Structure formats: structure tokens, C-alpha cells
Image 1 (tube, rainbow, N blue to C red):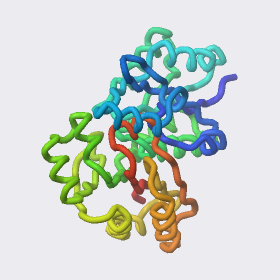
Image 2 (cartoon, rainbow, N blue to C red):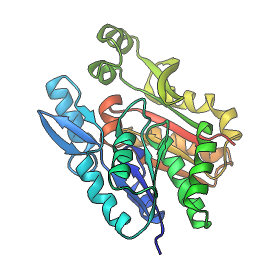
Image 3 (cartoon, helix red, strand yellow):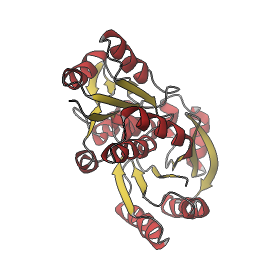
Image 4 (cartoon, one colour):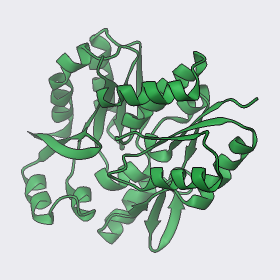
Length: 283
């Protein structure tokens, strides 16, 4: 008799502790530097990525999970007769979900379910943890997929970028815009909507003041959020800034758990250091 296995790609940005506690397996995306490919979270760290990017004045390329690596992780689960629920980064950003679907078809394994998270980072992680909770409650794979997809549009994922340099290097913002933005100390708030990233607000000033303003601007939404948990996800921020955000969220006296996670290599490659986001489910 198989069991329900929850699998996500590495961009879900969940900590090792959360993955272990909830029996979550991850499949790494790839980061390409100097024509060599590295598995995200296994063969390269965000700090190494930043150092390479600054030295080469460009950002690494990122690519979807590989067929071979994915199959090597999923095959033992299939052989055990497990129901597998896979969560992938938004299909508007990556072909990862389609690669897993291809494996399901090639292996003729209909019990491999693929969910397009329509999100990134812990916007995926929130859905993964919800699925793990439903599995512990004894829900079937089909019920879990249905409930997760029903709730998917209620994920609130946003973050504030400290520097526009990395977005410019990756072609997601014009170099002139980045230069002007950095000179004026503009910090855009990026929100994920319907699977795509869009600029919402533009803050200005020191990152510490901007991040706190961003958190306070979310207050009404946070007070109406699912109280189960909230994520502080960052790509390497000063400890003081992270603790200020944690203190602010704690002061709302609303959430059962406040999780802090560090963004992995793929997310860090595109947003650069100093980025911080607050992610949660709208209730």
C-alpha cells in the first residue's frame, strides 16, 4: 500500500527543518554559470552566485528541473506505489511542471499529480505545507489537489528588492532604469499575480526603513490572513532588518507561526541580495 508523497521544486524555498518535519521532497532547478550547470541548493550557494555575478557583471542563467534528475527522485516513489503530488514554480516562469508531466506520461503513472503553483518562493511553500497538512489529516491525493488548487488564488506573495542591478542583468528591467532607480534609491515592491511578477509600489530610501514601511502597508491584509503561518523570506538581509519585521509580525498577535526562510539560488539569482518578502494566505 503506497502513501501520499509531497514533492516540490527547489524554488519553494522551504527550510531543511520544515521539509523534514512535513516529509517534503525537493527536486532542484539548475543554475548555469560559465557554461557549467549546478543543482540549486545542492551544488551552489546564493553567496557563491552573488560573488560570481559581481565579478562577471551578469547574472547566472537558470533552467528547469532536468528529466534525468527528476526521474531518479520520483522513480522509487512510483515503484512503491505512492501517490505523488508535485508542486512547480509558475508555468509562466518555467517549463518545470511540463517536465514532470512528461515523466508521468512516459512512465504511465497517473498517480503522479502536477500542480502549477502559479507562484514562486514561499508562495509555493505555503501551498506545499497546506498539502502536507491535508495529507496528515487523511485526505486522498485527489482531494488534496482539488483543495490546494481551489485555494491557490488566495496566496499573497510580494517582496521588496533592494537593488535593481540583478533584475537589469537578467533582462527583467532596463539597465538605464536600474541605474536611475539605484541612484534615486528606488525599491520596487514586486507582487505575484496570476503566475506573473508585476511591480506594485515603488518605495524610496534606506532598505531598513523601506522594509518596515512595506510591512506596515500590508497590515490590513495581514490581520485578515489565515493565522496558521506567515513567511519572512529573504535573499540575505541584515539580521536587524529581519528581526524588526519578525517583531512587527509578532506584535500583530495574529499568527500561530512566523517562519523565516532564506531564498535559494534560483530566486537569489534574479533578485539579488537584500530582498525581503512577507508571504501568507488570505483567509
